[in-house]
Length: 483
Image (cartoon, rainbow, N blue to C red):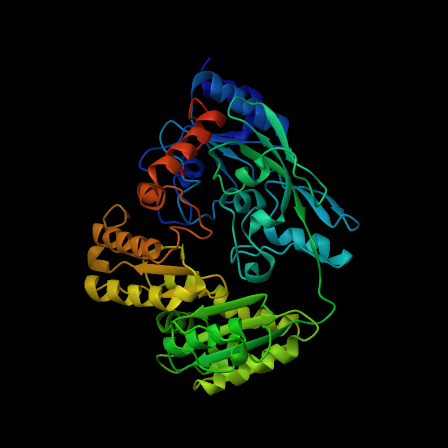
């Protein structure tokens, strides 16, 4: 019996081998397309079935690529020749919402946004909110330790995950973590699995923390600034509570602060290239207020607060924006704030509409954001590429997009060497500034070659040893993450 025959016997029509379906599994939203055709798609319905699929694959040494909705941006779910795609998209049940413990228990294929929708009647919210929240699964979010617009205040996915059910490469099922908010027994395997990109185990179920909805409607400030320097200054002032306009490297004495700053739940920055793209993509009549009239060269900052004194902080931010030559408006309520944030969420589709783009993700200390933007400008000048970059300004996470000129595009859709060279310069600049190769998208296939630049030899050996311990035969998502 072949592995395909074994899986067909186990799954019936849920062992999918049609060309259209299987060939689509060679890529995700990163732009990467694997050359060879995967063996097929194994669509699991529950943890026991995932266990049996992995037992079959493990016995025959066949590699397995776990996959949720395929919305990743690093190639982590792209499958190639000889590999089984283990689809978790049918495991989409919300098993429990507990308003007392303030947790949700969900299967891996549940969409991120659906958790908050289910928790809303209880006055609760699942806080991590990647831009893909309406289409990405919680399993994929956990695999990449996804962030999002609210992570400045509420943290990334790791901070929200309390417990996991996962299946090891040989089919054994493990239960990590606990339902209680506290627990320090043994090594934290839950935290280890979060962000492991399907290389240590296949996550099938998660218990995640919910947070109470604020009793005060959120207040949002939308600021249109005369350029990137003004936008960076505004973000610095919002985060520091400073009453003065700071230079890039100024320290802030206590006497210069107006008050201890209230951390915004969201603080997004769009540089002029990004603003231009979104301005062209989203019709003006689908926007409100000052976002309807954006002048060439403008940058945009969107901040949101969700505490009792939200209005005060938003008004202060608006005054700060005007002090650096910008225009600002304050919006009260969730609906108005969401309409404003839709402008930011249009970033990826707007830039993709301009042609092929390599969507990247680096993170630097917040104080180094101006330096990182200067590095991006240097790389643009040296390569002739256009690299629009939005940022989660409150945590230093930038999303540069390398727009591929038509003349440079590979006939097979691959990324041209000019873009890889520019990405190499970008990654090394981020590391030199004390940052990291990826803040939330993961390593996947895209960044594996740069791991040694971020890790020392000893740390890389430890990470490889952990992978070897979990998966000695290396069948789980080979070539992805730590390799």
